[in-house]
Image (cartoon, one colour):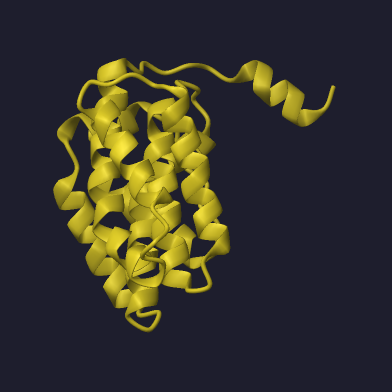
Amino acid sequence: MRKDTQESKDVQEFALSEDDRRFITLWAVTCAARALPLFEAEAPSDIRPREAVEAARAFALGGRRTVRLRTAAWGAYAAAREAADPAAAAAARAAGCAAGAPYLHPLATPHQLKHVLGPAMYQARAREFAEGDDPGVGDDEVRWALEQVPPQVRVVVGRMPAGRPGRTRLGALHRRLEAGLRG
């Protein structure tokens, strides 16, 4: 049996309610919306990231997970791929991650944590790029994001296994966010 097949059979679930998804999505929207002007300054006529943030906000405030929400997420990711400016691309990714937050699965895998942290990671990275790739700016944004997090998100993260961030700058942001949420 392949290792990944065995690991998928061993995956446990953690408690995750619809309200938990809404709190996570609300935080995701807060983070993504902060970076959205960086995308809109680069591509003012491209509304896909804003649509993703607004669709995620609608879910966070009691709406349903719909095809519109999933389509908006994919649209924001497409906008990120098309963006020439790295700050705009990261901002669009933050929006895509926010629209994907309602689809978080209650699977106890390190990968699921990236779905929770993604909007804040990309928002911080977008702001870094906008300020000449200054990591101090990203560190400040991580602190800001942690100040915005609802307590319920910390509870959900506490139920999840530790993440496996890479060695990139996004990995460093992931580590700081995870430590802040668990601390």
